[in-house]
Length: 235
Ligand code: PGA
Image (cartoon, rainbow, N blue to C red; front, side, top):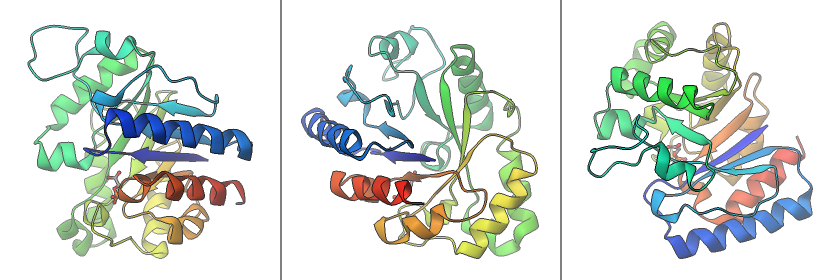
């Protein structure tokens, strides 16, 4: 299983270091076989000395080695820290920051060519969910347009937009049905994300075709995130 923490615009360089140290000693003591991914803000990146089950990734980067893209980070800046994992297509980048499918495809191709592990996010807004499962699947598949889903280092995260940061989790039935239909096309592991917390981790990880979780809000507390890793180990 894959247990991932997305810090978004939270934590500082100092608090990230403390978080990662605690996480590392927890995972060392637990002896877990699950993969743990952490996406801190770019300002907190570093070369951490970690248990080999833990990887630190970047939440976003530009599709360039280096160049004139004010405010962006390219491959050269990431490589310095030995980072080889990236989140692409997160709903906040699509819907809040206006990233288009074309830009996302370019980014995907660039970091795929670098051999990165890519956590590629898809998920429908509330209006689409209300139209029914056929619309949901069509919307999610449209977000895969131009994406090589046979890429060996791909992990897909299904995160319904209406469940992200809202406290609303999709029901077990909704998740199971959606993942089942997505799985007909996607052979890569699929994670669920959207208001995952300690209290619902066990149930979500027990859903058929759910190969892990991508956690935002509830992961910002290292103790809660460790608890989720502990729950995953017992499933
Ligand atoms: P959330 O965020 O857990 O706060 O809903 C999930 C995500 O955006 O990856």
